[in-house]
Length: 479
Ligand code: GDG
Image 1 (cartoon, protein in one colour):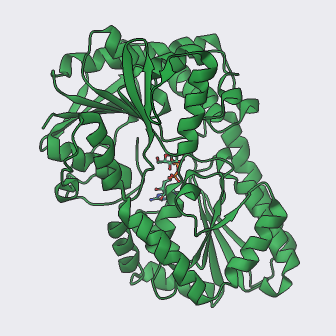
Image 2: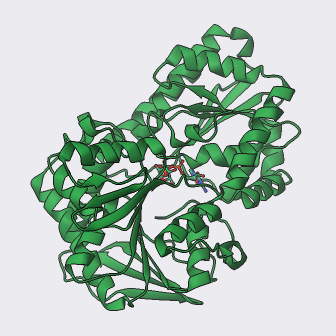
């Protein structure tokens, strides 16, 4: 079996005890790496200032090598904060209004991709399979090809691929689209994303479509397909079940004092629809006064990318909004919204999902949204809670038995909250069983197998699950 090379912006390096700081995605990729032997390359998260970037830092764990490179201040500013987070992220989430184009940042993005290619090159062997992740590294295959690499190279986009009118508004769209066609396999989260991509190619007159998933540009043919990412379903379900017996869980239950828990878990990001959700919750409370004092919304929102001005502003907006609702509707012994602005440990999160009667997963746009899947996996089969899910999350394509909402429709979402909280247990069970079946069939290990099967041209399914790292599942992904 060929070696596997994973390249992503950040790398989940195991700590000194050999424990992997991993959510489902990192666990699955580490298992695939352990089964084949291989290398995971990415940015260390550190800047070397204006100095020359030194040698790679290498961490070995069994037959997996983690190789980390620093970047200069200029690289971090232009490639990461600049083009990746201030142009590609908003564009791919349909927020043309937030994209800040700058030629300097665009050039920096391509330069850093060239740099990653040059770091990888000396470590490559002839039949290595290379799997590149996410929007930070779109041009990587093209840079590797220019440097003579002939290996099979795959790419998985974790976020949405936008509609052509949005994508083509980006000044550098043509170069970016062309570089993407240097891959052998391009994975998207949904059919919709793949069709948007195919339409971008057609609108640019770039190559031709040979079949549903086959495309040809020049002499090069490649596959572009949806590979919806999953979670470590059974492991997460077990984690949630065990968490229900912990002291934290018991304390939380006590503090709820019989009130129904509603949960929202999102990185602080404008794509997640947090402000619209709080508006909908307020509308629900006002229209259903009988619910007041009987429900509590726990919104867990760890900070992310606080260096980007929109994120800093959003942090203030959400906190003020929650404070306003609590001030207007709360009483001395009831707080409608509990707002937590930091990260919880993964087992604690799993336990809270299980306790919650309703999860609000209402992004305005999301590649997949793993929170939706984790919530379902964490439920108790006899008395499962209800998933209220945005139709604009990739997960809505698979979890059709969730209560689907349009997050822009605040009143509609408020009414869906009321319906969900009143849903009879038989209906909840039926919906849950069907969603759980989907999650079991397409867990993150199956996702990994399917993608690598396509990339390697093999239909045999290696048993990655058997090679799970000892550290198990600890926290969210770091890619
Ligand atoms: C990108 C795409 C796509 C959140 N708070 C805590 C915590 N989390 C974990 C969740 C979940 C993960 O973070 C978030 O994953 P999502 O999929 O919901 O969203 P993004 O981070 O935006 O991820 C997305 C994904 O890539 C994978 O392809 O689904 O569409 O945007 O696992 O549990 N984890 C812990 N404490 C927290 O407070 N431990």
